[in-house]
Amino acid sequence: MVYLYGLILNITILVVVHVVEALGGGVYTYFKDLTSHFSKEDDIKTIIFFSKNRKEIDPKNLELITNQNVELVEVDMCRKLNPLQDYKSILKLRKLLKKYNPDIVHLHSSKASVLGRIAALNIVSKERVFYTPHGYSFLSKEFSNSKKKVFYFIEKYIQRIFGGITLACGDTEYEIAQKIGKSVLVRNGIIVDKLSAFKKPIKNNVLTIGIIGRISFQKNPDLFNTIALRFSKYNFIWIGDGELKSQLTATNITITGWSLDQVEVMSRLNSIDVYLQTSLWEGLPIALLEAMALEKPLVATNIIGNKDIVVHNENGYLFNCIEELDIQFKKLEDERTRNEMGANGLKRCKALFNTTTNFNQMKSIYLNTISNA
Image 1 (cartoon, rainbow, N blue to C red):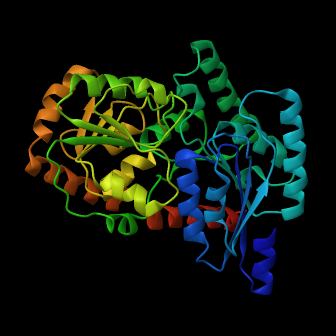
Image 2: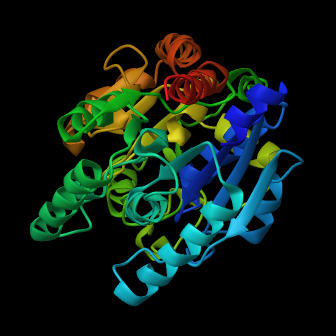
Image 3: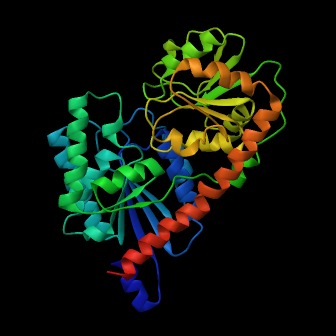
């Protein structure tokens, strides 16, 4: 391996291949921060095998994660089960793994986990294969119960047969991962100080509640719309766009559309008083962390991912039914309450969800794996 050879020659460059089929949404933000972090280090080379097949992937975004220590390599992968295409993807991945001969292989999301583990067999040792689910597929509410059972079976036995270590991105995901196989908690994070700099004083005449993300089934725009209809005296903003845009019919909802300009996006996020997350399922949502960096109180569905970030009555509220929002929003009309919860959120974000700390932890895990080989 390159790293071990480097030790002999006094050249310590760790080559890490990341395999990701879904390089969009929160996973894209994760990789943008990851590549930004590791590009500053001379002792690590990051190579990303990715697919362009997801419609939410914008080619312009890909330009933002390339630099001298990061290489992007396109591999045709598809989300759905497709035996012929999956076989071709595995062959392509094996060919590339032999070419780059990495020290570490890190797989992201369910499909890449299966394809990558099979492709790495007898090329990279099982102990050097890592997997971050970013939200297990068997927890997704877009699938039937029978499909979710199949996905759980695949997750469990693909790890049992092909090995690897799960690097869970959130506390609840870690609890689940421990039941499946060997795992370590490495939380998702953000560059807190960089995003906190976007915080500016605001004064809305009407309580303004917002969300950022793709208008998709996972984010539950129907619930967001129902909430806006129930609380017609407030203003609501959806920062983003998506295929289910037509579900947002309430007249007090503003849809901004997408922007690649981080200054514009963060300015819009800063303009809200309360961040509302209506998701049906999550891994560990980056958008909630971004809102915390801007000291926004959080209101979120009580699901895996959200509940790993929101401490009820401390930095926001979790809710199980829409009726609970009557009291929660009423309390958040008070500016002092919002400021207190926002300050608590920023403190929690710095302590637990800082990319510098968490990516350094991940690098240490890589290096320990190499040294113990």
